[in-house]
Length: 467
Ligand code: FAD
Image 1 (tube, helix red, strand yellow):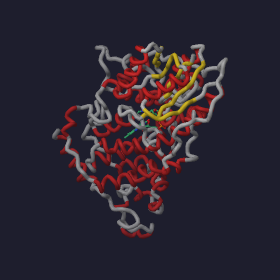
Image 2: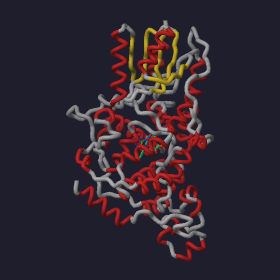
Image 3: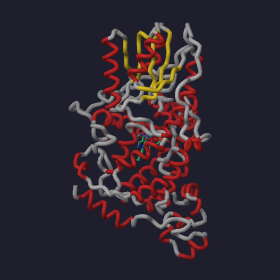
Image 4: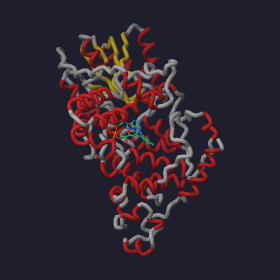
């Protein structure tokens, strides 16, 4: 008999409860990954897909070493599982839970169907610190505000991560991963930036804890410093579990002196991820439906030209352009820059947050079903614990605060590199002779701003204030 482990956003050996349970079953174990074509499941964006394909190669090798073949197929999940049942003589199936409404509906339909047909099916918790329904307010309700959620989570018992399974007693020889290997060609340029796979994820965590954690509370806001963990694409694909990150951070805090505050800050950021999964689970379709009902009545602009300028990093606002170009070139963007580029789209251009969310989804290696929409709703003001509508980021002021020396802008908008620090965040207001000396003709070498920050701010305040 064979035990099937259906892997999804959990592409790792260690701390993988579904895999551990399958290995404990005493049966031969086959792992399955499905490029799902079910309409209920959100297709990964192009950048995440690029990551996924490589992550599967690493996973296949690591599973092969302990005697588990990885089969990669494309199709509707129920159909592919049925094929596996007949090809491999499957009797039991394990998976780790996922939380988007469509995914839950699909998984529970498959589970019911298989159980009715006499198969043993078990789902496990592998992708969050705590199940969304176990963290509740004093009244037993879901949280809508982050701080009390985080405090509650911090008090909860989080189980220690599980070790990777040992080599199986009756290993199966692994074949090369079959299935779709096409990489989106534009993502090829990411080659060499990331170390994909479980080992790469642990290396990133180790480097972060050893060299960056102490400066994290200050450094995390400064995009040029690259002071954060860069774990998000690894977490997105489950190459490392939040529980592993949590306990490694706690262990580091207990072993080292002086890094407690920094460690707590990092645990708090990690808790945002669980908070967003909490929202994904409890609220209606957060990628499409504003969490605050009144935002359903928001009137958005149809500004195709503005949208394309934003996507291509040609808005004439240096921090926005730097961020959008970093995203396009690396599949990543630092958090503060994500906030201010998103804010520029939603507030200054008044373009629907869902359109921006989809662009990020397609371009981010970490494009995540909970974190992406929840953060967009935070920026748009339609989230439950969101930035209040009257607090509108000014990307020029943000640039002068968080990229004072202009290093980040110079890296991604090289045509501005020769501008002095004082003017690099706001070339539109630089004196003519300064621009000339830096070799820049506005409107030719670098765009004039596509929005007047002051006027567009007033327009956004008016539009949102009247909801
Ligand atoms: P670190 O600062 O090192 O944080 C460690 C981990 O904590 C992150 O990997 C992430 O899992 C979690 N975390 C940190 N900040 C947040 C946050 N605000 N919300 C949720 N989790 C957080 N994150 C994604 O993982 N996927 C997305 O698709 C995504 N889309 C975003 C869209 C917008 C508009 C904004 C403003 C933020 C988005 N984020 C998203 C959150 C955040 O920007 C990234 O998680 C973070 O920049 C990743 O870098 P890091 O791993 O170095 O972060």
